Length: 343
Image (cartoon, rainbow, N blue to C red; front, side, top):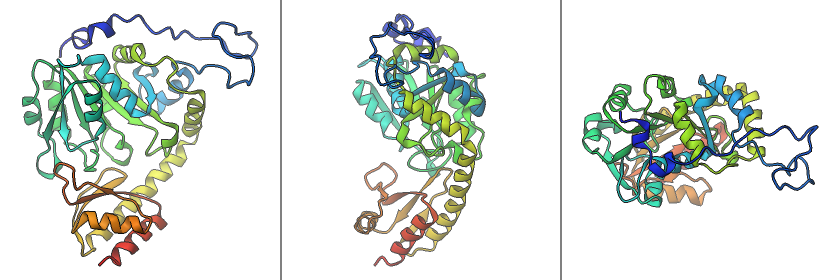
């Protein structure tokens, strides 16, 4: 790969480190350095800008070093930062699989960076050679999502590794749904691939979408660039506290994942029995993709009954498909009951 300095926008490389120095605790100290109000403690104090305690608690859970973690406002912040750090507007481009998570394309447009989608092959699988052929000397990022959204399937590991070894820029692998899969996570490859960035989140398996906390794993030098470019106090104290509580209760998370996987198996089997279901695609996520007869009409029918699913009729390679999130047992029973009455 190219050197990190070659890949980074010169203005970002030249930024001084963000002044994220540690402050002493407000307990036992008089803090008069940050223009904070002395009232309404502890909410009057700015949050830890580097989320040190949270990263130290999260690192052993994820099997990485604290310095290999960046925390953002959802994964959206990290996606946007990838463009801002590595891509020159109107000059550089990125390559992504298609269909995939729509925010990669959105932030390319926001940052005025060319976005090159490469359709997936048979069974929604990655074809590394085809994707690499879409790259040129101005391709800074490759976007991969595994398990992929909206298709729900894992990308073949050998094809992903071929891209990691054959691409000279940064490879971003979004593993937002990896906890619902039994495949080895790509964050375990950080030591072998300095051009690797892995995204994760508290939203799905951790059942904490409301706190908006995204996780990025990368080489410490790459994390240093993220810390340079981010908003100084990007993660609130309340979010950090809620994340620590979630980590302390992570055995509940294991139970939630187990229940979702059990329900996923039942839902896939039940959908295959529905007369209006043309195909059920395999899933390694907490959702699954189905091709339905009259998908848009089915989606509207369910909405009239208070059940909301995602209509993907306008999505590349997903025409006639719905994306169904696995709910609780009672929610899944209600969905199936409504579909069995559909005429």
